[in-house]
Image (spheres, rainbow, N blue to C red):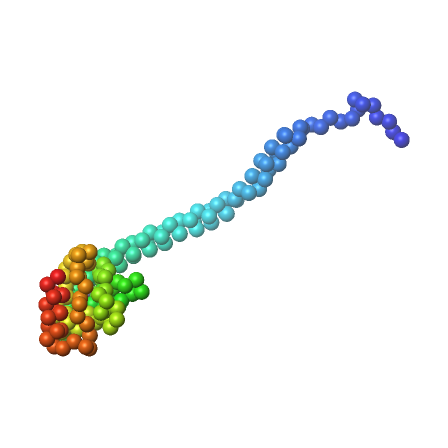
Length: 171
Ligand SMILES: [Zn+2]
C-alpha cells in the first residue's frame, strides 16, 4: 500500500466557486443559438412582425370601411321602415342595431310594455321615423324619460299606435 505524504496530495487547481462559474459559462455557451439557428429566429420574428403589421393594416381598413358604410347608411329599409333591430335583453335594455350597416346604438331602457310584449322597431306604424339621432337622444334623456305607458304591439288600436308614435318621435 503506497503511502502519501500530506504535501503530495494534489491541490485542486480550481476552487469550487470557479468550477461553478465555468459550468455556468459553458451552459450559457451551449444555449447560444448557432448562426443558422439565429438566422431562423430572426426570420421567424420578422415574419411575425410583418404579419402583425398586415393584420393591423387590414383591421384599420376594415374599420374605416365600416365607419364609412355606417355614415352613409340612413338606417332605413326599402319600404321606408326603420332598419333598427333589437330585443329586450335580460338586463332590461335594448341595444338597437341597424340590420343594414350593423351600427349598434347605445342602450335604451325598455319600457315595461316592451319587456312584456317585446318590441319591433321596424314597425312603421309605431316608429314612422327612427333616426340615429333620435335613438341617441332617447338614450341620453333616458334618466328622465317617462316609460311608455301604453302597450306596444298587437294590442294597440290604430289610434293608440299613432299617439304612441307621436310620443316616441317627440322624445
Ligand atoms: Zn344602418
